[in-house]
Amino acid sequence: MGDFLKIKELGYLQRGLDLTVTRVNSVAANIANAETPGYKAVNVEFEKNLAAAMGKDFGMTGTNPRHYPLMGKGINGVQPEITQVVEGARLDGNTVNPDQEMNNLVSARMEYETMIAALNKKLSGVTSVLQSAGR
Image (tube, rainbow, N blue to C red; front, side, top):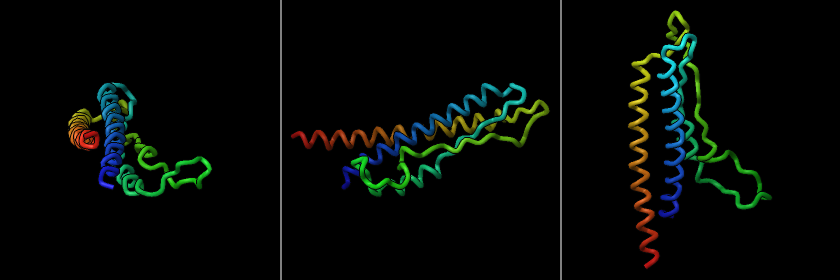
């Protein structure tokens, strides 16, 4: 079961990385449009949805399309919550706060680097298991 959990964790990390890239792209778009009149900044949140899916993802899995339908889509079904920022608009209607967006970018980069480090650690563990099994 321990090796199975390592493989599951790889899926969680992969989905977390995908969602973090979505966040970085939205922050980059916000920064790029900081001077665009009427542009509404976008926030990407996914942590609650990811945590909920991680808790549910250890349930049944379907192996045949004729099986009973499963509840939810597990980790791959996690979608980000994308919202427009409406408060704090300037006179031209733009809601981008460049200082906040730079902070968001730094936070997203730290999240990404942390997940990459965890992914590398898990992959080296899986590699070790595979190598020892081949002996």
